[in-house]
Image (cartoon, rainbow, N blue to C red; front, side):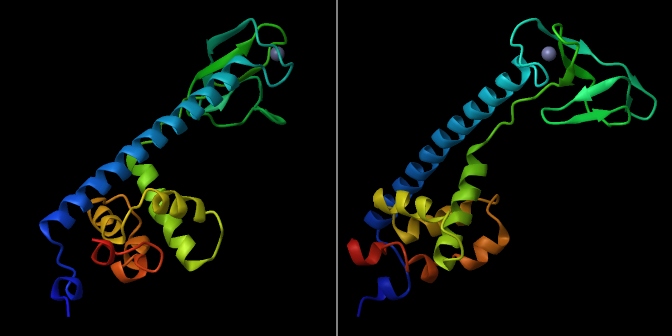
Length: 188
Ligand SMILES: [Zn+2]
């Protein structure tokens, strides 16, 4: 009987491997966060540089919209689809203005995705994958399986990240993780 295995006590070599795998997952999450941020930046760029009313991509300028009283907007707005008139509340007074048709729409800011957001999503995906509730979590689980990530590494990573949902933390016990990820005590 292997007591280390029974009580989940890693050897020095296993500990080193767990830490290396955590570094790898964090590096992958960092890369994914950068990719998503770039995608959002592209989306904002497209939204800001193309008039949703007439489709013009030139002669679009920034304009400070006059906001009357209780956040009421003067004039008409067209946000991408359909028109919103008069009483819409906006949280920014800077708008994009199309000099071709006179349309104005809200300036799209870039949403930044951070490493912790990706880790939170990935851990949630693993939960969903194990629960077999939806299929969207499978891709994340398979990606980490392909990298040879062990259950113990994911377990420790979750413990280090406050961003992970509490319900996910509760669900992803070491025992549960071992149903889809190999155990370091089996391979090492
Ligand atoms: Zn226009």
